[in-house]
Image 1 (cartoon, rainbow, N blue to C red):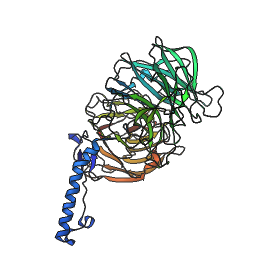
Image 2 (tube, one colour):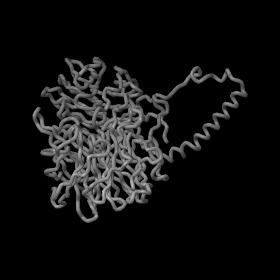
Image 3 (cartoon, rainbow, N blue to C red):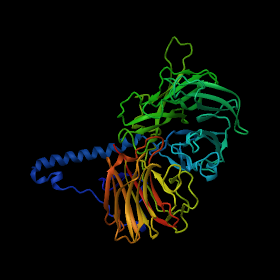
Image 4 (cartoon, rainbow, N blue to C red):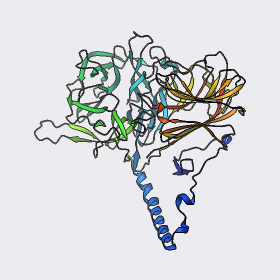
Length: 612
């Protein structure tokens, strides 16, 4: 473990943490300094006391050095995918695991991670990685906020990867009806290329699952609202066979289950074959405090399904709202090569006001199967028991593979040396052509100033990486020399089209101003701070720091030798309020004016600091 002195006092930086690129070094890194007054001077204590204290300190340090690494190496920390990675689905091919998550209105869509130990994950690609896959009926061009790609399932069958999911699109207009575009994409290599979407006609609802049965049949399990619901929000899981030749539904439709504990918002079905029977796993209760995982079993995939009397099998609905994580649900089960079972599920950390900026994240939970012990039952079903020791999603669990430690490193650096944009970068919707370039000026990212600004359903020159911890430091070096009035460029911390910070330089009449803005839902965009920069010479460093419940915004005009703080705000302004998490990004706009401009970004660094 590398220890790096920072303003956070020897903060832990993962072993893969990269320093600033050579051309951008020179900024001060503050170390922790403690005075005698703070620590206590030895002049006030006897030699014997000092001797005892020294021996005690040495013994304590020895114990820490001997046992802490061992203890740390025996457990992993949740979430295993920090940042806005909701609705996880997972499959295994030999000894490698692949996971996909919802991406909603963001592009590229359907992020795919790979792991060989379940606790260290690598982002290897996206299911929707070409604009043509996300235009037309599968519209991610002007999709509404919180629309787009919902709850995918990933499976592997006979050498091919499959992802099945829903694009929820509400056309503009007050009387327009929401469209549920369910589709499948396939790939031989999980890194891509992935096929164009096969849209499944006549498939209502959301959250589809694909199941390859042993008899060669392929089944589609989906979620819809019943024709005659008993109450608002009642959901129902339905099943129908798929034709693998054209990926269209065929045959009879079967209605399987309306859930276990009230059936509110039953969704996210997954089917499994175990112990000679079919198991149906669902989410229920809505993706908030009452979220839960339910399961049912049947001898026939078409039903009827028998609910587990011990449902929900995993939830936080019975725990304090102040539990470290809440809203646990939307799970997927899988088996390890040695026969053990695990589950991935989403959950929300309660860092701030029982929420977090990151929103719904992916957690890993051990599972054991137990057969019913009731002697009077003729058929004793076997049921999965997540987290069998406590029944909760714990912050720390024993490692799945004891010889493979978890190396948590949520930090990120990009100096734009590659000819391809790093996979971590996302856009809100399919970006406009010529939004950015890595070739106009090698080793820089050039972000062109779009006439568009951040607005609902809009596309502008805004790109970002996921925020992965509540405490962080985000720093960007930018060159901006445009003289056209009204053009601005800088950084943005954003959650939605109506919820963001922008911290930018903007050209005024014969001057350059530094402006910090805040957008909150249903309120006008507010200028928190504006100041002229008389000494601006074309280069600036932006820094946004989050610690505790505060954000601090600062800048440097001397290449990081000194920073000037212009504002402090509460950190709860961009808490995740629905489906996605916050991003830290880059932004440039001409604010509606037909003026060409751009900003060149030398590098960005993001350092995340885990809270206890």
